[in-house]
Length: 186
Length: 358
Image (cartoon, rainbow over all chains, first blue to last red; front, side, top):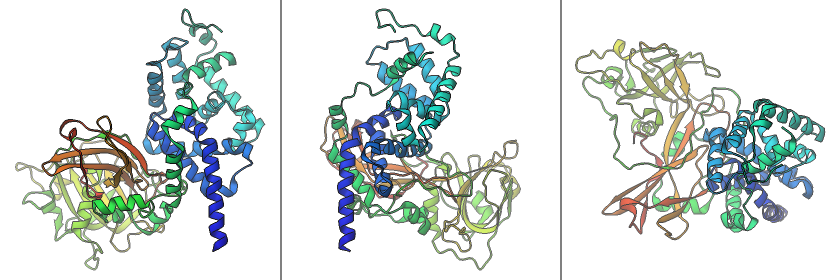
């Protein structure tokens, strides 16, 4: 019995370290995908609860965050299913909230176009691109998060980009996306 | 589009690109988060709870306001959460619930009343709490039960549970009792049931009137909603241990739409505790997890005795499902407006099922 209690204490101490280390990254992940901070907090808390129950699967420290992203993605998928919220609406809300206080580098129409294209992607494609551009993960790290090889992650991301470009009606997109006057140009 | 352009545009879209670590720490402090996580860990698996005891039954276990608060603070006695999403094979979709956090007006309950009127559907279909007339609907037949069938729960208890079902919103007349059902609806995953004893609430928004005959033949031509629960009746449990529970809807005589099976979504009052001082006209609370469901909103009622806060949750109850949505205790701010703006003390509404008709 004493050993079991000791194991639980050790596990809780390890959990406290993992929460302290990764909470901000996970909160950013959640805030990027949900439209209010309470829901994001719920997602982060639920992710750590699931992680605790799967502690025997925890990877080395340099891979913990990607493992947690994988869990968060599945919890989020379940949450969105339960909440019956469309991604399109969420992204529009995120867009409106953001652009109410921050001038965009591109016209609203351009960014709306990109948002709509993202919303048209399959959820797994969208997640791949968000992990790439928002969480800024490498192919290897995305592979760790999604449980696939680096090469497979690269191929899937490439296909997701290709699909996005098709939705943006390439090659016209380069002509339609025009930096606003007095903004930084590429 | 080259990758640099895509990177730039995606960066512009990133909703949190300006949030610093310190802002995030303010938003969700470490101590607050770790407390919530530990609270969630202490709670046993919801799937196990669901297998043992139906939500219909759980929801009927009303607790007082004080007890609710104690249960919430104790974090775990409610035994509502699962450790991870669990897939359950078979059956039609559970039917997830919408979880927007909104304020409901606290107007009195409206809609159908529970009882037997001379010309009502109940008078035609129900006798001594039992179905007394055969009702042939599209894909669903309801027949009188065997005389040997004795429910293990009272009709009053089951009526209050079924009244909490959101499918009864907008219905103006309901006949409630128990009988046997035979189900043969062509819908993916729909169970085939033959003469299974269940409780039924047969509801319509277009009741018979004084000028229209109200026999069984007239009733079957109406658009009907039938909420079905096998709780407390013998031989109704499926192999996974859960009682049958779902909602059947059809469009009535002139409708070409096929009948549909949906989850029976029950509205419940959820336990809460105050978790902060009144600040800037807001009341900060921590709300208990909703078992396999989601928070849906709240209502405030003010009378001379004070203000009562009811936190509402929705729980999809179905024969089966795909996922039991995880939930943990959550924090909410309640803006105080109107009559509640000057309130300094809040009463806790009784927890358990609440009528879904308001």
